[in-house]
Length: 299
Image (cartoon, rainbow, N blue to C red):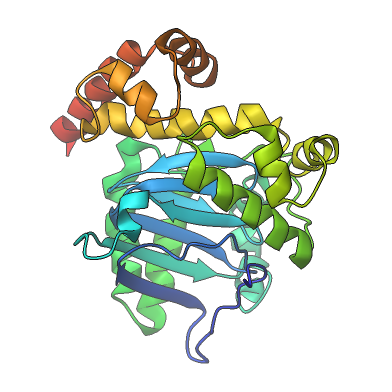
């Protein structure tokens, strides 16, 4: 299973690569590439693993992913079921500020843009309040050619720099310096966790996947993710719970969501949820609906 690196085919006549995909699910393997990536999720749900962090995604979400940051848009399990009828759709842009676009970003007029990229080297999630505006600009880049494409790209970048309170994809101190072999091993570990989070995963189970003793695995996992294994597993479960709490697809009550996400105690679920999200499940639902109403009112 080849995971790292991932090479994009760059056309000779373009400095910004654009693509619009419609598939049963996203590319399922942890990977990285020299290009920065901007992806607008038009259809599909799942979890974005970026560096040592996770972000639930749903239609309307837009992510800017930094160059060489290991990442994977992990579609929900139901997207891998044969004949499910489910599809993902996404529009993405790729650009390399250190490659073919280096001359542009080295211009004096682009100094603030270059600084912006350096300050946000791992990328960020676009706040919901800016999603429609950014999506329109992204689509204009995708649909344009020649000098119009560059003009629209620069306008899109200006919109990025005007965003306040963007959510970083992972901590600034995270290092994306990881070998190909380690990338494959880490991908296998993450895939195992993502596929089995709602079952009673033990430290011994996941250590076997990594071909390590439990003690060696704990040191390895903390080194490459910045988290203890149980903390990471809880975050995966809470991310899944968050998606189900606001979708209402999996269960009609909080306890049902908790058990579906792999918790066998509602008390433990509430405690872990608050430690990860910073609020109770009920408050999370209330705040989501409030923000969603504000967004639709302004759209």
